Image (cartoon, rainbow, N blue to C red; front, side, top):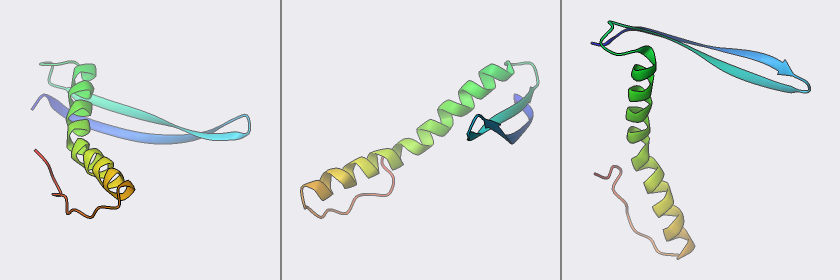
Length: 77
């Protein structure tokens, strides 16, 4: 596998009156791709996994606005 190890940490800090958080990612690869490329590919894969949920929610809102009841499949292709 191209990614040998990955870690993350979240650190809170105060910026003026607002509490904010920053995400640190550490990615080690075997050299076949850069950490930036690995992060890009992983991010794209994660987004594609969540797209069916986004479309299902959009369909649900559309149907609720039209007062129609239809059972939607949990996952779409």
